[in-house]
Length: 322
Image (cartoon, rainbow, N blue to C red):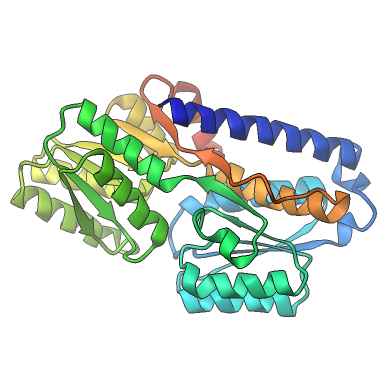
């Protein structure tokens, strides 16, 4: 938990500093942005899958930054690695001023990001790719340390005297998700991986429910997204299981479920902050010459949300900022 607190303190400090600098540079509003600021276009390209509401927070943060800073945000997404790489190339071809990109499929999307760097376009990575972004000349990364986050979950399950954990991965091959479950297993070795199809929530519910019926020794279900956690809740009920549910990420329903005691805790990577800071860092580089590299990744998590601290977070989750 000490490492978690450090990461949170760091991101709060960085956020406060960059917001303050942006306010000073802009004179208090987008209409007073530095010369040329109004004409800047930043492309944000993610691996968002259809129906995954997690990305609403990423996009909300990015759009808030763009509105505050007076820049144009071009958001695009594709869960297919090759198609996401094509979207990055399209951004290069359209001569955008900056690129923010996720690297869930680093082998395919990383070279496209490198092409943007080689074209003289400043690039930041966020959400996925913390271990690889520098390999492609990318200056900065905003996101969570997924191995640390997973290990934190595993250690808490160990402290709770858990018997067996089920770690549910909703997108096989997704580097961040695989790393989360690897971290859980590191912290709590008696963890089994269960793959589900995250875009088909009824199927997710059925698969988890069948596993719980087959294996009553499962004491903890670890899901890697809020929507999957909601499916796991129903699966647990249908199976008559007493397993505790732990999840990554938040939405309004999950925050309420934590407050009600239906979910043990969530590991929040603060996606709104990721979207906001990715856009803001590029703007500062483009308008003020700020160096957006050299300091290592900026951690936005893991932030543990449990019954002890969820109270004020419920409202923020309802506003789609947590």
